[in-house]
Image 1 (cartoon, helix red, strand yellow):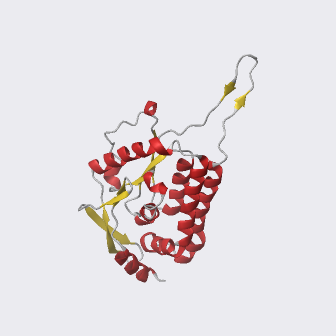
Image 2: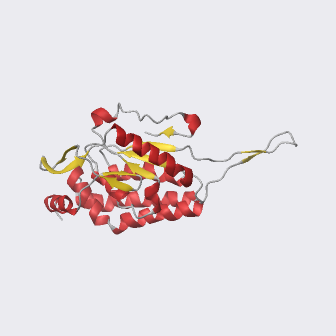
Image 3: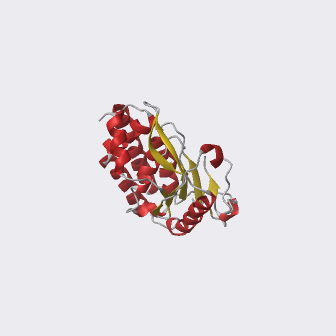
Length: 238
């Protein structure tokens, strides 16, 4: 499929929206998505406001309360299902990468897509093997050990280059270790980040993952009103 046909297919496929708390939220504030190969607008990108960002953080905090207590088996199953979905729609993701990122479809199909799926499968396996340590000490009356615990809500910024691979690199390990995630895609390459997330709205993963978008010139300066202090179990990941 050519990039021109891909553009038509995805423009008519569905309208994208903010994805918060397991549901899609339409917004009237949009900006154009430009196809690199033609320089033409091929669809519109919804833009998040300050209240949307706060909602995403609040939803992630609520989801974290449950997800942090999920069993290793559940995390493995969910991450494996994400890999299955990516592989099932491999041609779709490759076409989307070609449309909005200018990447040759063949390279995306044999490179980006299987790498992203493989990353989710890798961390799905690691989710079952997370262990603490027992540390020998000289005091015979002491027992010293470590316990690995999730940090909380991870803010993941996805760059314009290789967005699907970077999404997997940030999202999979964070979820495998029991964290919730708020995604901020690049304003230039939005749909190859949002599509895998919103496609999971029927899967358990949707409750732990929230996506929001803003123009890069403003999003970098935005700080949600919810506290990001570490004592509350919240960390920022770039």
